[in-house]
Image (cartoon, rainbow, N blue to C red):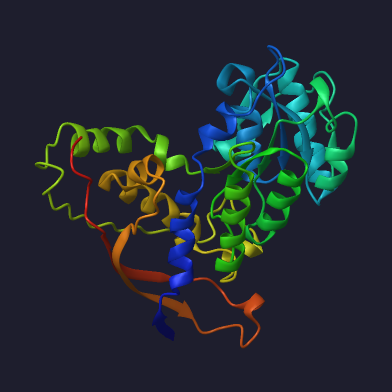
Length: 326
């Protein structure tokens, strides 16, 4: 038996709030390196996404960065990823287990592991990862569960570090508002970037070009863009992401984990994302949001035991459509 309830507006706002924060490249480009050395990144979280970023993206050849340490509450996971990163930095090849980029690992052990910790405060206080000078941390990358984001963002900013934060921004609207406030207070000395990978999808970039630049759907000031999106997962959480939090209503679910990407695409197609970051005035992005979400009957009154949504249908109408040319 399914209970259909109105979609929490908080959850939809959590999809929108990342666009009030700087895009991810700003956290990398505005972090000031010392001399010609690469920007040093402290990776917080040793799960699937952090593994991909540590081994594939936080490299000097890819982004002009280098992983300087790993933090995870589970020391064994932190140690394992630290060893893989150290091996890769020493020249070991990185492979994707079962063709899955989230299971990337070094093919052989080489060199020394990068430092690993079970506490962000300890990591930023150690001479090998924190402090001043060439051995300091430039950026803290946060790839942990949504409920932990606020405390980690505040801790990193308080230590004078730029932040690259994984989506979703937080588990609650209150935490999301606090992160936005902290980012605004720290800027421009420090930048908080939100990682929305869909922004760099080649198909999305081409669609945006056709809509906003080539105007294949007509003049952007008058065009009416309608799109229907249907998604289906054979299982949730996905097989590479089997974690209790991801299956739970408090922090997980496909609307948070995947819906963020598609809302990002909607902002790109409408031009709203570019308009937000080119204007000092906050403007409404959506004119109307309505949806129904289906949840399983389970878990009783204990929110921590309630499972995430099993289906959702709804409509989002953008405010004003694409901005006029010029």
